[in-house]
Image (cartoon, rainbow, N blue to C red; front, side, top):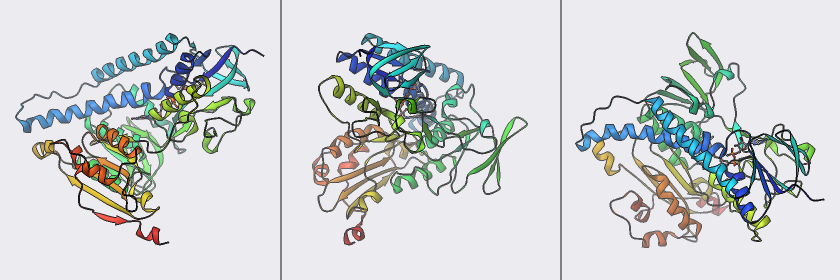
Length: 458
Ligand SMILES: Cc1cc2nc3c(=O)[nH]c(=O)nc-3n(C[C@H](O)[C@H](O)[C@H](O)COP(=O)(O)OP(=O)(O)OC[C@H]3O[C@@H](n4cnc5c(N)ncnc54)[C@H](O)[C@@H]3O)c2cc1C
């Protein structure tokens, strides 16, 4: 039976738009449905608006630091409404580009929610269409804790609709979004406390980085409160009162749940289409992103593997090339570099010291220093940490980690080297660019310690 489309994509975010556009470029008849905003989380309530706000917070600090460099600037404070308008204009521009890109590629677009009716049929905008293949790229959504008063708290999406800076903010959670929000809101002038259940934030990151970011955030006046969780939120007059597991109370003007995201699979018709879900609502897929129905695929945040925009777009592109471009390939989930846009930022690629040491002996190189800009500015909490984890047996650099100015910009190049299997000798042979922080990655001569010797002996 002939279908209406060769490919129907549910979700017009990073993954869906890339897969739809490239598939159409290969000649496929493609439709994409988007229920909320073209470009998805990244463009509308994620990476892009967040980075604009991080930049806004950093500008305030640059303006203050300028005095130490001889500038005399009058700072009349921050205008939230002006920032919000500039951010929203840019987001609207980018979102428009995403939908125009699809239309330009000949993709049929639906501004509507889509739902699977059976294995080849999708209900969208009051009609039913059929497709030979279907891609589920519905992303994820912020999760709230199940405690009394949870509805009084905000989630990450809400940062981008606030009409003013809340004066006192409590952030619950210790993942990258929690720490980024804490730093940007602090940088814009709020009093911020971060409450988290664990003893250290940023689970999965290198331990030296986790310790250093707590130091950096504390130095800029953010209260970091580990080993605690909220048990209740209540409204009292014009503010919120948070009761903690320690029985202490905190007063705030805004409380953010940054407590993880769940895949968007509710009400999608997975059962009707015979698509199996995994634990936590994620869709189960094989190495080719095929679900339990071999002609239905899923990728991006909805499979809950590596939840980052470039991973979603790479996977979408690879699937389009595989299905319609006569170029079968799989995206690699190894050595994916990532950043946390705290102040200062963090960037990382490859294995942490703990992960690498679990596989055998490693040499660890670490440096900590105050970058030139801040030896002059005197701003507290801006010390840089850079670290390499090197396999003793092969000399290969297994991981690079940095907290410091421009970490994300620096790490992208390091990720190429590590992906190519660079050794410590390759790093040492490389001549640095002076004077930069980046040059420290190629001048780390003295081993700080070795680790994993015991793992090798076992
Ligand atoms: C605050 C925040 C900051 C982030 N910062 C970064 C960062 O700095 N760097 C980075 O790499 N990543 C970042 N991310 C993660 C990144 O945004 C996601 O990994 C990425 O957007 C995933 O793309 P996706 O296509 O899988 O899903 P999404 O971009 O979420 O797209 C899914 C789309 O599907 C639509 N949809 C859902 N259900 C349906 C339906 N039934 N019918 C029609 N449409 C539907 C949704 O409306 C959405 O637009 C951040 C995320 C957040 C929340």
